[in-house]
Length: 178
Image (tube, rainbow, N blue to C red):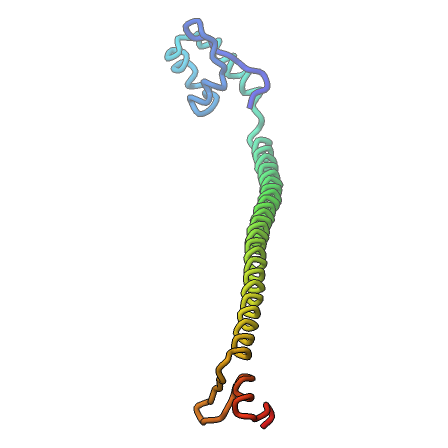
């Protein structure tokens, strides 16, 4: 409230009058100056002069209310600007967090796909090997089946001939078509 500090000296220590005023709640009225001077052990005339100097520095109540309203408006305006900037900063921060989470999920998904791809390649190689082994085994079986010295035939449950070897054709004299 004061542009120039007005001080009172008490027991060798200088106290700004605004500190005394704050302690008392206001600049002391003229009628209380003798009582306050006695309590602070200062000369009442000095205190009265200092109080008048302080009153001269204090703004009128209506001007003070205008300043208070202006300060409140300024505080609200700053608060809105700070709130807006905070909201924008928070929004950007949240977007960065979401982006990093998506990137992390993509990296995890990529790793999982790489593991699955490696597993599929391994399964494909294993399957190709099994198919090759099965073909080789089928060739050995067919070779054995066709070149055995005994005649072999297979009948289904209905008694229909489904498979036979070359030796059976030689023994029976029938051709494959017959």
